Picture 1: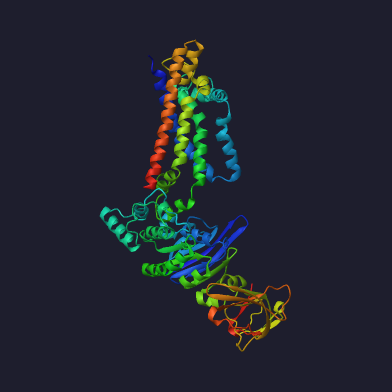
Picture 2: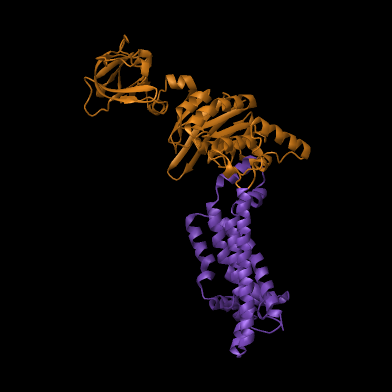
Length: 222
Length: 347
């Protein structure tokens, strides 16, 4: 039994979630502060990956990172290659998952009571402290929801991933590309096995979140 | 102790242009909502930046647009009590107060000061609760504790009682005043309630539309509001357009009356006001025949509505407020008012 697709999918989803956590939160934080017009434009650009077909995103990523493209060639100089490599999968998953975190985080930041940050400032707390210890905990629920959705989306990513990194067993194979590959070659038994693995992971993630939420509410009530 | 504020800030169509020197222990900013009171406080605290002007606290410049000085709120050491208290919802009462003690490095000292503050604010037993579990009065005390433990040089109080029930408000005001006195630092209090302003503030600035229309000792402002807005905000119910006749006489055409005033009538007089409490059937001055319109009963007072006999049909009736035990059996035909109670108002 080759467990590589599971390992690869998990590391791609985990790494892209980390990237999306920081970039999504930073984008949301600054977007909230923009004037209305700039915010509207930025919002459209940052949300596009959510509504575009993943294959279109894969196409754009190939335009950007292709081995004959300026950026792709520049990256090749420092031995970084995103086409047909597992870390290309991290980029593809991150782009697709980004809007989910960006939008939920932005909603949470917009609902945040700015007087809490102002109270922190007048008490002499640093802006960094206020961000991580007051703003983020107050927006915790929205951000956790965003991370979970992003992680789940990254784990299930197929279109952009298969365009950018293809399917190479033991190298770039993820659960979703493996399911397709096995089904295409008529290996229904193994395809079904990977479907079950995917189901188990997704259910575990969602269960964990529900448990976390319940515990949090319990703490607040106590 | 002194605070000098002189700021200008434009927000869309709204222009805030305030200038005042706070000299009293508690200075009030009285105004209707949206007049710029809270914005003024936020500029003093540094969480909002004025377009231009100067803010000087005890000789230290906090903000000066001409000299390019704009201290961060963290550097100003100015305490701010928010209208909804702005307690950190995810922290316990204890940890909320501890955020005000973050400058204290010594853990033992920090704990000692925390205990002292909890005791002083009567928060014993609430240490482990979260803000959502507190009553309004408790939340106010936690917010005060968090602010005071930080030892600010100036206290900015933004409608501190507006989030409380009215009975609690009246109960808490004396304690609040005692606390401000014992802390011994200057405070600026924003309010839309004339009672609060009168109870708590020695000095009062009346604001309208981003400007201060009257500034002075609170009792003087109530006795002689000078502007129509100040008269209205200090609770004057009977205001009518008026013009100057001579040095001591005003004419109010809508009431068909001339009044004698105790003070010299200003040339730019535009209105006159009569406080509802000051009418008297046996007053010697400014007597006129009245017709009774209606009466409204309040818990401890009567409000009698009347019109002067010569009064213009379109002018609303006047209010006479009197304690229940002073209500005459039959309403009098004539009411007078002392010259010193005729308010002379300009724009």
